[in-house]
Length: 306
Image (cartoon, rainbow, N blue to C red; front, side, top):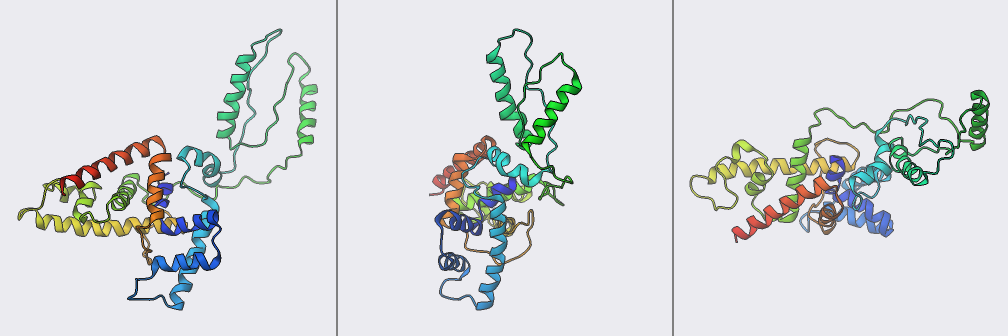
């Protein structure tokens, strides 16, 4: 999911993760939080600003309590263990036949395979509800069999929810389009990889504005004919980068996709860089491949402009 990928670039979400894993004290995590927003020596946070940050961070902690550790989980595994419970309505599992044994049959290998398929696929797709694995003999009175099944269900004593509820989260939102979100993710990735790269080059690489990119070559130095165009691209990229960071921080506060304006933390810290590397190592195959391709492009451009 793109929200999960965007969250990996959020310093505040990473701080929530550190609180959980490193058991930071309240003083430790508050100092870390305030340092993310303090403007060096030139400006110190006021009491009011600190309280506002703490209020916002409560939302981040709430998001973390729902989404958990996203840094090392591949998308498929995260979806099975966490995402399905967040984004789908209460599951509607069906009674499923795992296999059938005919008289005097001894095809145990096939039965093991059928059971594995049920446990690893069917049960997962249904949200891993509690289930009974039964042996139902055929060729007997149906009502007699159903009565025995009913008794076993009663003995299991699993409560039945009174009303099916909607999932906690929705998968869609107004104006949710994958490509702009992926562009934002790429832009954040490029910036992490090389914080000092010129903005216009970042914009060309991340495809911020295809129209303004025509004629700009990231592997060449600017000349009199391209400098004005590069300046326009730099302005557009600066705006896009801010929106990308807002996407990340608003996602950390449970609001996705949103570019609602808010104070942004220091971005290029070791923890966010670590999450980028983890995405390469543990991300789904498609995301991992695309990120590695982008990483190779960056290295080539850096070398060409030394």
